[in-house]
Image (cartoon, rainbow, N blue to C red; front, side):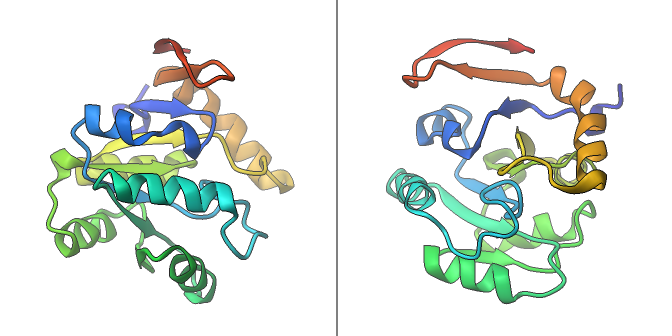
Length: 179
């Protein structure tokens, strides 16, 4: 299995990526995809759950930046403005240029940066090429449409080799390891 397509960690959703987890990993800059990572693509504005998560990162001194391949900046700009965060648009994932721009703009190194995303061929591959850790989540809102369903099914074997965050419903960590 190609190492470039193996996430470091796999989470059910973004809320499982806590400030404590990120600090324990030495992460100060969290890059994140938007569509299907933080919200389904059809959702235009952040909900209170996402706002609270973003605030918890901010309070812990962790910078969140959206790294997006969206052709139009309208949705990403509106989403980020509502959250009070910045973004790198037209990131060109999986090419490493967008990752490097985000790190440079925030004065961080690859060693203190992680990428949060839902796709292997853009988010994970790009993170690996840029030398940052990859935190993968299940698609927010589920895979929609036949192409997304096929794509996400093809990702399953790769996700199985990433360390799986297995928190119980009450948020207590039960174990970690390959799924």
